[in-house]
Amino acid sequence: MKNFPSNTTDYLIIGGGLAGCILAWTLRQRGLQCQLMDTPLLSNASRISAGIINPISGKRFSPLWEPDVTTSVARQTYRELEVHFGQSFLREIPALRLFTDADERDIWLTKRAETLRFAEILTPSEIAPRFVQDCGGIRYMAWHVDVEAVVLRLRAWLRDEGCLVEEEFDDTCLSFTGTEAVYKAKGQHIRARRIIMCNGWRTLRSELWKELPLTPAKGELLIVRADAPPVQELIVKSVFLLPLENHALEGSIMRIGASYSWEHLDETPTPETAQILIRKAQEILPVPMTILRHDAGVRPAAQDSKPIVGVHPHETLFAIMNGFGSKGAAYTPFCAAALIDFLEEGKPMAEWCSLARWKAWR
Image (cartoon, rainbow, N blue to C red; front, side, top):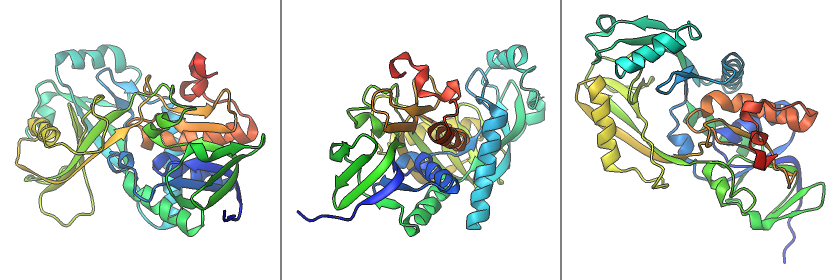
């Protein structure tokens, strides 16, 4: 059997979507070595990511966890990437959240208005005539991250740095020496102080992580051309309409999403879902729309809709950063920094994102 040279590193990261790439970037910025392992194809979960950092979401207007800190770290990280690569990744965008009914408006008025004062409430007449609605809405500032561009740029950088292994991870090829994890497969011989799982819902395929409290959900998104003047805001109701920049096409180019399915966990776009998204979008903006692109992927959502970050309670050479669902753009930079602080300096993990918040994983 041919012997391959051993590649010793601090961390072996499994998964090259946004989580794995931001973690690799953060490790390198801290002076730590890493290898990132993933298949050559970009994860569909990153392709379908809307990249929206929305300070409030859901029917009950749930705020982000630690919003001041998480959004500050996210914005700082994406701005650092912009400076390093000379490429734009982040933009601030006004958001217009339309109330779906009077009950939703009342929830805002009675339960959220005092704690979320950054949002301005609007009457129906202030929103008309561009968008169809009956109950008014709220306006506030959000951010959009071009997740696909970030991931592609970071993967290219990692490849140039000799830190990207474009192969599928096989956990049967792992062994442990007590202080190191050793991976031998397909010409690879990697020795690492720790392995960090960032491969989304596919983590459940690992024997060690198969009971992880994830509830994967298939999502589909569209890019469309709407026969209307360019939309300037992020519009949120039963779906979101996100205007895209830097295009040479006439009309308004928008990303529309998102669907949720917990039954068919594949990455195949479905025409039926596309028509549902178009119909819901036209209920907000009633103009003809042409589909330019249709993507599908599986989100690694945690059961309680919070990230999952920490060390395996029994195999302590294994760590995880996962479970971001639709909030990866907002939470990933914070969680990457928190995980490194925990592993390298022993700083406590925030309870809301810690793996140990589940009793079975302490």
